[in-house]
Image 1 (cartoon, each protein chain N blue to C red):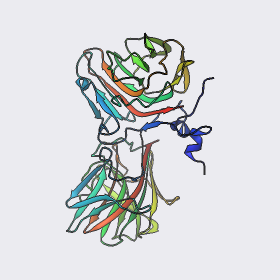
Image 2 (image 1 turned 180 degrees about the vertical axis):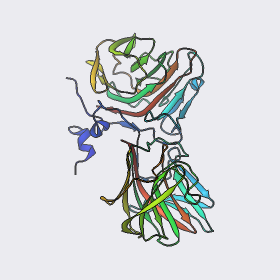
Image 3 (image 1 turned 30 degrees about the vertical axis):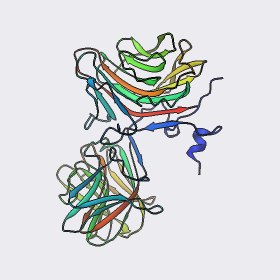
Image 4 (image 1 turned 120 degrees about the vertical axis):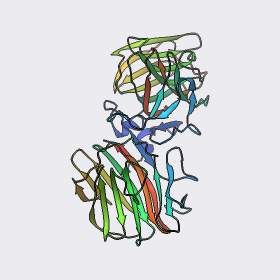
Length: 212
Length: 210
């Protein structure tokens, strides 16, 4: 029998890992996730979405520029040599979902400087990778336009070498500027932001984070 | 050197495919994860709790009195497709007389006493001789028995729903392929027992959309 341990750790040894399927009836905010920016409408589970666009955690906003999300409330368990992976979608084009690793809670409108996050954000033309060091935050856009489809987002933080965004299994962005530094630790964050007068939701149905 | 290590999800599927809803729960713990599971006394009293023993799992009991029923569910948060999903439950009946034990996927929380609709369930009804697959659409339910007699042993039940049928595999052997009265709405994982002082144990549940 092949052990999962061998598949994911060999060669090497067990490091910190978080895995969440968001398959439950009530958002797990007591022990695992912290609801952030509740003014955005809060975190709910979607009971009856259409077809297989089955919402794990639905983050619903209520007015323009409202934002909501989930993080680990400052439990900074991951390094700048780690992997963040999620599957997510937003419900309307003129809005934003973003997720990745960040060094503090922050919020959508005022993200922390030290971060590495994907943005499917109408503020950019294309799906982007946003990273920040202690001095600046910058974005590199992919060639894939913002949309309202489900996507698998994998971000590899490779120390001082680069950060990469792999979109649906294909390497989309390699970024070498403003990389999150080793002097900070990071937590996963999943956010959605309304950017017009139309209500929106962000859906996340998988999140995995691990140190390399 | 850029080190690339696989995630757990990449052991199950390539990232070129969409990651769909997936549940894995082994009922190994001190108390029930009540954010994930809703322990529901359909007809009170019913009791719930982990059993202190090797491989003993989690016990659901319809306590003493007529027509009692207890059920684990998602409080009708239904994340699984009626035309493309799989549910695996490892379950045992503590007794095999005067009870109904069930596990699988369902729409609703009213339980087997009121014969809730939209189901695809293992259906161990002591009136029957063998373990059964019970399915239901919005109006009609029906049961097809397997060749496996009711007993008090652990069994692994796999129920798969496709756009054309529902299958029931017991301990790795396909027992039933059912095409009638298939559910027509999204479903949640459920497990429960109906009776008077009757129990079932569960120690693993996995469900995913295909």
